[in-house]
Length: 120
Image 1 (cartoon, rainbow, N blue to C red):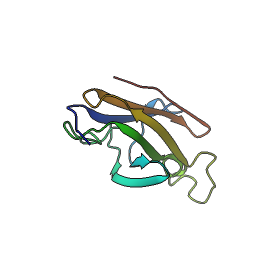
Image 2: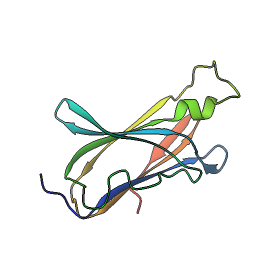
Image 3: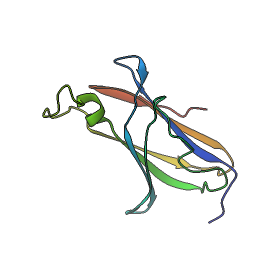
């Protein structure tokens, strides 16, 4: 499959505290029908972002992807390590239709809700 000049980034914001979510494990999967291929695992930095694009410039392909954010441990943390989180893993499945564009998939999360959108 041809690669474009586009790339993929993300950003996690803790809407309960009004700050970036640091230390969240993020997994990226490429989907082909029922097959899921783990492409990368990263952790959000102190700005709620990753150190580099999740898919680098020049490596993006048209297709269906899924980001999985392990947000449960972030909200439970040391304050409540034995509690069962209401929201644990947040999966966001999305399509890349143009491999020459920048796709930004942010996560806005609290312990009891989340939302996303296509950012810039």
